[in-house]
Image 1: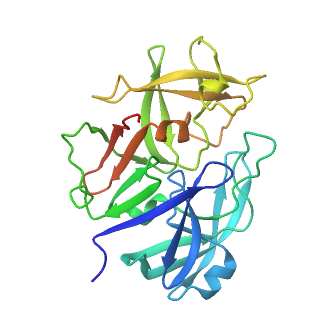
Image 2 (image 1 turned 30 degrees about the vertical axis):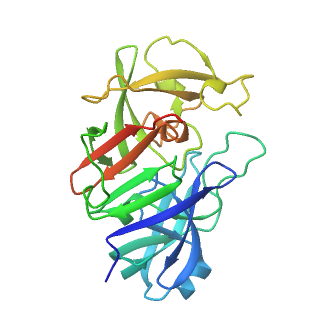
Length: 276
């Protein structure tokens, strides 16, 4: 019998990104969970070559990362994929070969790992819990054992070609940001700000950050029922014209809130962790 609820415990890599070790069609591999990536699977070519059931697809897939760098990747599909005993059908993926992403501290390197993106979970409910260091997947929120009356706040699930979009507000002006487990910290593209703002130290976002020459500011969610929820984000210089979104909501938010991406219910659910 396939698993009803599948748990993926994770550890943090050196860029504070969640890494799971999972059994995938009979082989054990490490993956970064990246809700800022849509494509279901990003595999190294040597894993593509030995993963049972993988079918190469013609043509190349073009991706652009935050720095504007363009990558051309091999494409593949897997009609039936078992991950930790749970079945996923018609999974699509691409090859990954070079480090992608953007670095916020000089001594860290861009993530160089295989990735699981949002589309793997289409049709399922995914609970991302940074406090328990666990990602759990089931057919719906009931199967995950979630009682919505127990302090959960529900927002609409808005999927764009870039990922899961959440409306935020700053000085009465509205912006869109993406929920991104691949983002070490929340960032906002400074050029997009439409009004003067109060500067915060970047250490208000992440205490390890250097506050010299680094600016941050505070934002509030602008979704019905969630307008009291705030977070801080680092302000990034640069145009980022290739991005429609105004920024990324990352780990400093997910360290405070459990998150459910509920595809069947077309909702996002968040709940503040109780501080111990």
